[in-house]
Image (cartoon, rainbow, N blue to C red; front, side, top):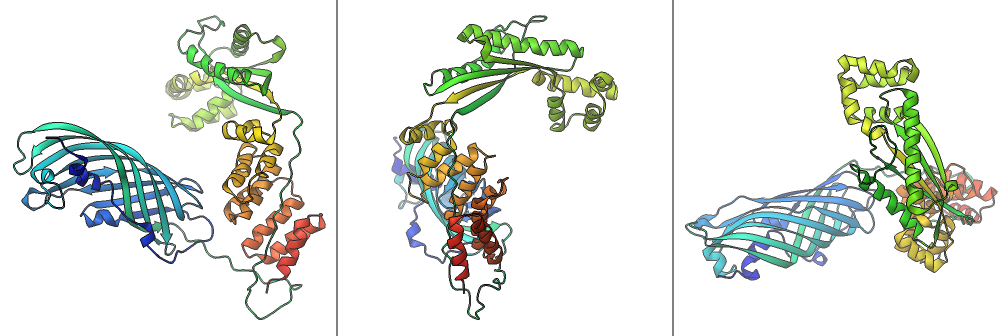
Length: 540
C-alpha cells in the first residue's frame, strides 16, 4: 500500500509545527552592548505533544550563533499508540542586528529516528491508525525567526523553516506489531522547522553606565538630562596606493630520494604538495590584473644529524623547488630569492608547547637553555632514556622538513564599478582607497556600506586608517562594542581618532571625557569636533 505525504504528516510534526510570530506581542528588553553567554530553551509546541525537548544556543560572533535543540518522546500510549522519536536539529543563525536580539535567518540540518502508529483517526489518517512506521529521516533547510527579550534572563522566540527530508521506514501492522509488511522511502519538501520557545539566558548582566557630572563650563541646571546630542563621526580618506603590492604564502612538504635533491612530482605525496603551489601561481598568471614580481623560497630541515649538513640540505630543497618552477613556467632567475634556514628549532619549540609530549617542560628547557653547538640534540636524546626524543622525532620532525614559499605580485588599479565586482570575489586585491570610494557609492549606514569598512579592517588589521573608518562606521550604527575594538587597534592618535573616541564616550554618557576628546580634536583642526562640542554643551 502506497504511503502518502498526508499519511506521513504525524512523523513530520516532530520536526515542524505552525506558528505566527505576528501573534506574539511583548515589550522587548534591549540591553546595551552585546549579549554574552548561552541561552537555554524549550519549544512549547513540542511540550504540548508530551515531547521532552531542550536546546542550547551559543554565541559564535557579534551576529552569529549556533542553536542545538534535542527532542525525545519515549511514550507508548493506551491502545498501543506510539509517538516515539528522537530528533536533533542543529542550526547556524545570522542575526540582522546582533546575536540574541531581533530578526535572524538560519541554516539547519536534521536527523530523526522514529517509531509511530496506532494514532486516532481523525485527526490522523486511517493508514496511521492501523499501521506502525519505524525508520529514520535526514535532511536540511532554511528558517526565519524573531526573538523577544523580556529581561536580561527571560525571552521568547518564534521560528519557522522549510527544507528537504529523506525518510526511510519499515511498515508493520500496528496492534500486534507482527511481521514487517514492507519497506519504503520518501522525499519530502515542505515545512521542516517551527516553534515558539521559552528562553532562559545564562550570562552576566552588564551594568548601565551612569553619566559623570557635567563639566563646570556646561551651565548647571536642576532639570534631568533630556537633550540627546546629535554627534558627527569622522572618516579618514586613505591615500592612493601608487603600486598595489600583495603577497600570498604557503608551505610545501616535499619528499626526496635519499641523498638527492631533485623533485620527483610522482614521489610519495609530492603531487598534492606541488598542486597547491601550481594553483596559486596559475591564479595569478591567468589574472590580467596581476603581475608576479618575485618568488621567495625558504628551505628548512629537521635537527637530526650534523648542523652544517642540515643547513646545506635546506638550501638544496629551496633550490630544487625554484628549479622545478623555472622549468614548468619559464620563470627568470631574477624572479627568485632563496634562503636556507637549516634546522627549524623555532617551529619545534612551538609544536612542543602545543603538545602533551612526555617530558614537555624538560624538552622546552633544553631547547631554550642549551645552544645548538652546545649539545642540545644530544641532551634531548638522553632525556628520560630517549623516549621523548623518539616521540617528537616521529610526530614533529616531518613538519620541520619543509619549504616555505611566498609569491609577491602587483595589482592594477580598479575603477569603482570594477572594484565592486572584485570586492565580491577577491577583496584583498583592492586598496584602502578603492574600498573607501566603493563605500561612498552606498547609502550611509546600509549593510553594504558597513560591510566594506568591516572588510577593510579585516584585510588591513594593522592599518590605522582602516580601523579609524571601521570605528566611524560602527559608531554611526551605535555599535559601541565594535567601535571600541577598532579604536584600540589604532597606534598613532590624531584628530580623527580623538573625535571618534569622543563620540564613543558620549554614547556611553561619559560626557566629561567626551568633551575633553572633542576639544582635543577641535584644536587639531577636526571640523566634526566643533559641532560635537556645541552639541555636548546643549545637554541639560
